[in-house]
Image 1 (tube, rainbow over the protein chains, first blue to last red):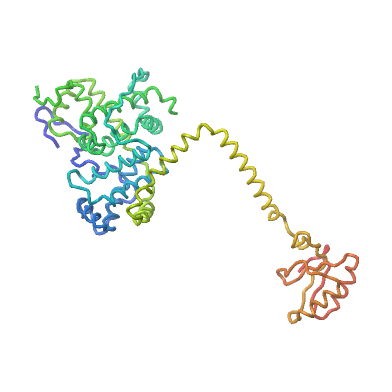
Image 2: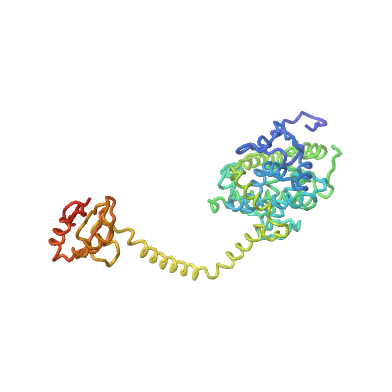
Length: 224
Length: 221
């Protein structure tokens, strides 16, 4: 917890996270970690060690890593490629690169950041996009907001409307939103994953939020 | 003043606005965190935005269950064995190709649809032709072979009957086997309807014929 130098102690809704992507916020299905043989309660093998073994073609180590990342990658890639029936295959494309390139991991970022960067590039390829050019697509003339903040909140909480609005964003916008809000990536981690400067990421998320809000406020009827 | 000037190019308000999602997630470093907090405390717009961000974060937290990990992993195992040179066989390029085909297809969608309807019609017709005989209800008096004469007698032979004896009996009766053996071991015979009574009499007289009946209203074994 950061010490607030002066003033009252802030009560956070969410605990401070030190490690983006490492704590998957929602456990769905059998817990990947619990199913690691011999892992016990805590992950017994740290991830750089797993990658080292994978680089030597250790299949058991690969399976451990695969199970650990499957849910997170499915969620992220599902948001990115918008084709639920293909998510499993694109997860496997990503993990195939991990299997083949494990030896090139140099320890300069966390393993999770390295894997998500691979997933991000794989997803862009899957939807026929070039590498992220680090441009910031500024939404053209913001549509006038017709809705009250309360109405936007209501629409945000309607899962179908929120999903449809998310799909109205560019893949790059969806990625920064997803990584920041769901996977709890710090700004610098998002920057490493998408391969762009930190300032680009800040601006990109800012525009993504405005665009999402515009979609929620004016396109809600169209989205239904 | 807090002294935490983070970005001279941006106003503190814009800076705080940009960092709000990470502030909320607790992923800012301490300097940034303190600077945003200081600004938000005095800025009603940022507090309102923070509240909205909180809702968005909660709304996005919903997690649809992914497909079963073990099934996906076993497909993965098959791909791990592909040779290294098989990189082009990644699923992704295939997907892109499919998307390209789809987008290019819009121009001739009408033609494609018409062709598809035509093909479906032809295939359905062919299928119905093939299926039709199977749908028919078959009785013992239905010819087993299409075009064959309808049976009008049923017989059961003694187990020890020799084949040449069987041939002799059938010739004498003027009958041909057109079906059988039935579940009970009977054979369906066809005789000239004009000679049916005589044939039946003859068959019933043979010691090696256990049973001979006319196929009419009477039950068949």
